[in-house]
Length: 457
Image 1: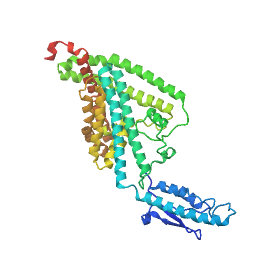
Image 2 (image 1 turned 30 degrees about the horizontal axis):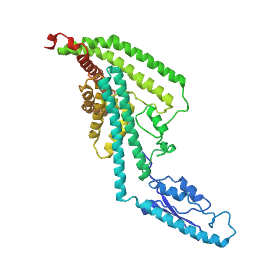
Image 3 (image 1 turned 60 degrees about the vertical axis):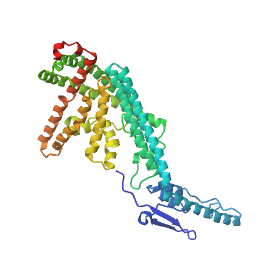
Image 4 (image 1 turned 30 degrees about the vertical axis):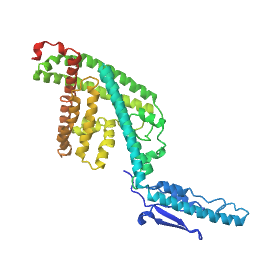
């Protein structure tokens, strides 16, 4: 949160005595208007130390005012005394008139017509941004659905498209607010101190955009905390972990998960619920092991290797989600890049515009559910809604388990919430979704259609 604004002062100079008079602009309801400073430079130094508030562009103009070489304060007096006095008078009068006009223009602000024109232009710009990112995701989705057969290749392609969609949206939203802060600053609301090393619009460069493109984050900032150097030994270790875990996931999938899934096809086709539940229990263990290996490979190994190469300092990609006392705590801690994106660009803006927390959470999980269905359903060529409802139905489950975080049950209450999380996660979550999409894939391309006809009756 930005610190509270300090009261700004207005400075005037008596031309006859050279004395400096200051008044508190915030107490008189005036803008921070600064007149000519004395030659000793003390007023200028104090103005430079004063933090700029709403009208910082006005203060910058006045702080740069310097006496003419022919003025009374000029260190080298010319030999033509009469012409010097005449030019001092004319220059002082002109500067005073210009300062009043500029102060009047800045304090009055743009007209209503100018505001409407400005708003209409940026509405079109926002529409162009929306069309751009939507087409980028839509075209990739169509290509993957109709022309990419292999689910793994399709998943990687679709994941990249979704990441680009989120990054581009964050880039547009953040620069919009930076532009508003630059053009129409609000008193008491300042950009973070970190951004001052690359203020808007100096951040709008291809170099800055390319860094964000590769940085292991979905939230755009003009400046990120950076490390001093790249530790290549650290990078090689992380790449080694990725290779080993990829081999492990492939072996575990081929040797354990796939046989269980194939043996479940006839049970699902005949709706043998008891056998289906038995297969889910068998699948839950291996799917959990594969998921944990994938989590470590992505969030610990890959993102840390990428962060080291990019010298990206903030590597809090996850927290101790395995200790979650509720489903809400899990979703806040296991995937922090996605969580911070939705919190910054969806949840908090809606709260700031007067929406209730429930409505904001509904919007967050709805968008997330759509993206989950795109990520899973498009590569498998089966839009069956399992990923969508599996994500969207987290809302009532969160509402049920959230009281466990607030109940004063001591250590037992935390254990109960964590047990509920693990049961819902390992049995009724991913194994069921994996089973459904595998069956849908086999029904469309595999062996389900070859099952004996009596199984379907």
